[in-house]
Image 1 (cartoon, rainbow, N blue to C red):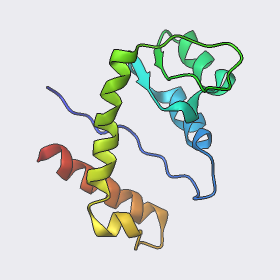
Image 2 (cartoon, rainbow, N blue to C red; image 1 turned 180 degrees about the vertical axis):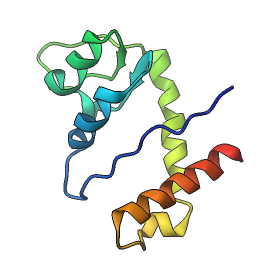
Image 3 (cartoon, rainbow, N blue to C red; image 1 turned 45 degrees about the vertical axis):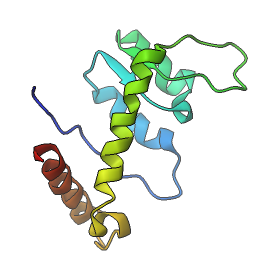
Image 4 (spheres, rainbow, N blue to C red; image 1 turned 30 degrees about the vertical axis):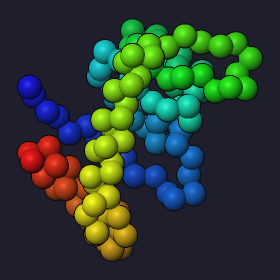
Length: 119
């Protein structure tokens, strides 16, 4: 199996999740995209991905007026993503962000991500 580290984009701590999605989603090359309810935004996430033929596996928010269907079995694999971030936070320099410059911090994330995938 070939493992590829996806592009990682840093956002300010006060930024919303969709700010990072606006940057990353146009360059995503995948059959499906798994995300949590925070990404249940039709105009910014779901429509652009659906137009490119990418399956959207995002559960709808409870307050959504029109409910959408999603692949619940495939969504259960999202725990692998959460596990990756849990392992990433095991590294103290990443969890506490010692680096002052974002380019150094991002470099550290890529190094740690490589170590995690090779382990």
